[in-house]
Structure formats: C-alpha cells, structure tokens
Length: 308
Image (tube, rainbow, N blue to C red; front, top):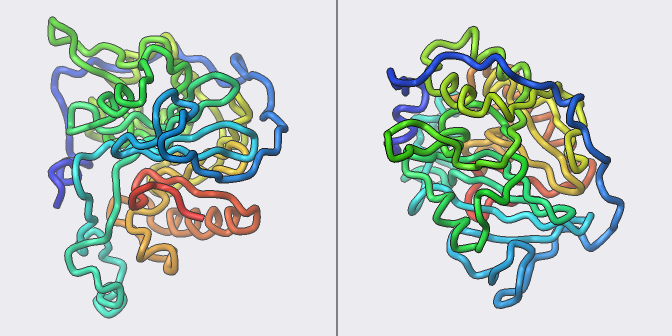
C-alpha cells in the first residue's frame, strides 16, 4: 500500500499546536453569484496555446479545460508517479466482483487538486499532500502560478492528503502558510468534528491554527465566493463536501476506485468513516451529476481527474 495511505488515519505529530478559535462564518464574506456567460462546456485547451493559468497546456501532471461560465479549471496531480488503489482497500467488494475488473495490481487513481481561474481570481480546491510527497508547489511553478496569487482555498475535508499542503516549514522549523494570501473555506460540520470528536487530530488542529486569521466556515447549501455551491457529501468524513461551480462538480473523495465504484456505488473504501452515509452520498451525487450533465472532478479519480 502507498506509504502515505498507510499513515492516513494514524498520522499524529506531537509538535502541532492546539486549536483554532478565531474563525468567521461564510455569511461574513459572501460575494456575488456565479457568472452567467455560457461558453461551450468542458472544452479542452489546445496543446501549445496559452491557457488561463498563463502557460502552455503541456505541463506534466496537469490538464486545463474551460467551463460553461468561461472559467478555466486545471487538474493538478499531486502524487509522484503512478497511483494504484489496492484490492485490500475495498473489503466491501466480493472477490468475484473485484476480479471482474481485471486489475490485479490495483485500481488506477491519483491524489489531485484543482485550480480554478474565474473572474481573474484563483480558487484552489484542496491543498494536497504537502510534506508527504506532494507535487503541488512544483506543478504550480511549472504553470507559472505564484502561490501568493491564490486568494481562495476550498476544502472538501480534513484528511492529510487534502490539507497537509496548506503548510510548509520556515527556516526555524515552524509551520507557516504555503498560501499567504488565501482565505480558507471549510465546512463547519467537518471543522467541529476534527477539532472536538475525532482522535489523532494534531495535524488538523495545527493547520487550522496556522490559518485561524483567514479561516471561514460554511454550511451545506451555502453559496461561496464566485458562485461555488457547497453540497452535502458526508460519509467519507463527517462533513465531507462536494462543490459545484458552473458545470463542474468537484466530488472530493466520493470515489477512491472509480473503475469499481462508478458501476457499484454501494461499494465503499475502507477509508470511509461512515459507510452507509458514504454509499448514499455517492449514489445521490452521481445521479445529480448525470441529471444535470455535469463534469465530475475527483481527488482520487484516475488521471486526468475528470469524468463525465
């Protein structure tokens, strides 16, 4: 099993600080609704042309497409090399079902983040692995994007492969912001669960403390800046969130093994903290995407991170 995922549920770093008390609700910072421009949905930038992130569309580990509102979204692969989800991660699946995939070495996947450029502003969805092997900063540099230019970060949930990239070590060995000018948006249900109820939460408490002066909490159903809708996708974690912007639906960790779960949403990953709720969310959100003809982006979908 991948080294990171072996420590996903158990990582606990003793030096991390406690708590975060200075937070703001999303109501305090709400901005305008989504733009109404109706460009062609899901069109991909041509290789060799300039994309909305300011560089050619041939940067390794990335793919940029244009949404129906004219915004661009860039998939950024945060893991280094190939990523396979092992058979042992899907104990809900029978041997016959799993074997029917003909993927004995594991199900192709990724650890991904997504960068949206809308109205000339950058939104980052999740911050990746950080010190646990993350490639996000290298990919941003290759795309010509300065981390200080990212103004908003929306978090699907608080597992380490989604939030560790928010911090880096300074010269004194202290944790500091990787995105100095970013407001971080987190679900209140998720935040409260990790701050109060879930054990082995030192990493989560520390990172939220580092961003306490720029942390905003939202509720399911809230419309966030630039018309991003926060949707209930609970099950994987207590406050797991999906986000919709125009015709894009960012589903976080709704699926860890797409080849298996796209046809069998009743099958859970062993990382799902509440399996019945996770299966219900997966079925509901996948049907919502089909009904509304949305493009899905997922943090563990196989490269390049998008599925229709």
